[in-house]
Image (cartoon, rainbow, N blue to C red; front, side):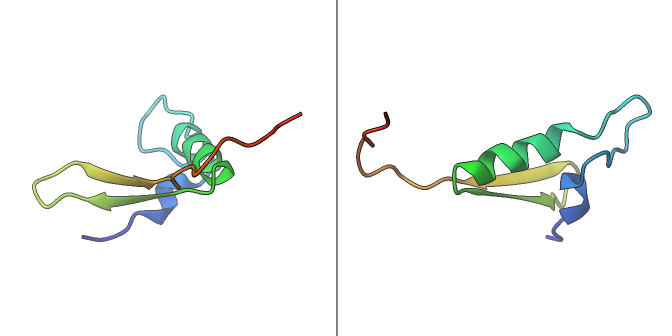
Length: 63
């Protein structure tokens, strides 16, 4: 499957009335939580999004 890195660029859209901000926002939020997101084409059509986030090992003492 081929990665689709461009879909995460701000204002990239394939829709006539799309803003192109949704996936860029998702990537930013996931990155802020030390995770990653990858998009791939599915052989039968459509897309596959893989999201990884780290497991929290404890509660931080935020003050």
